[in-house]
Image (cartoon, rainbow, N blue to C red; front, top):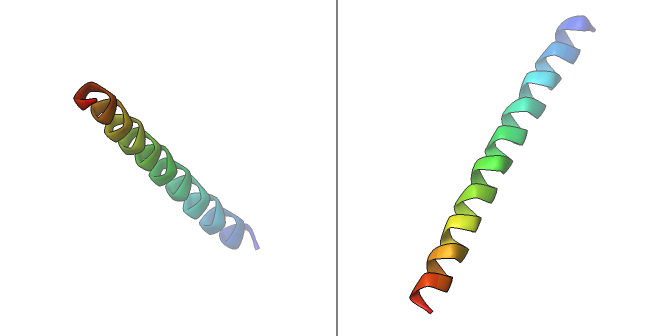
Length: 37
């Protein structure tokens, strides 16, 4: 059970970091779009 919770926690952490990276990419693309008009 403890192993399962630790495993799930690491997956959640990985998904969270991936989500933040995608968010940064979206922001960068949006900013570039604004600069290009």
